[in-house]
Image (cartoon, rainbow, N blue to C red; front, side, top):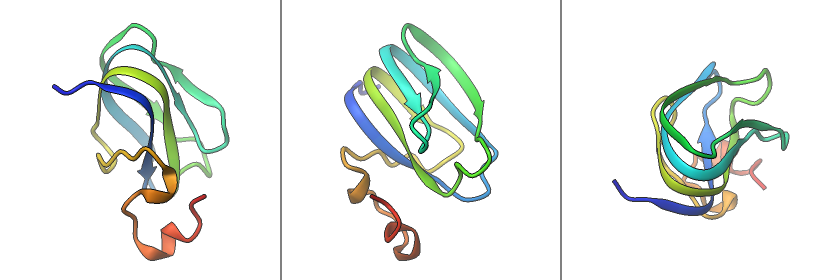
Length: 97
């Protein structure tokens, strides 16, 4: 598996209740659109599941400062170095900053 290093952005579609993913990371944080850390990903290795807080679906999330492997399982697996460069439908992309 290819390792990731840095900060990456991904889209959580509207209606998503649970964010499921695999992480094998030395460091990093999963950050919701409101800026709150959902999970500290330091020294993780396994499958994880986190509830998507109300109002945080249909938005771009962040994997901040990761170093290792992450595989998104319940949302599109596209990662971007810049939130504004995610491949999204036009009606969603217009609201992404």
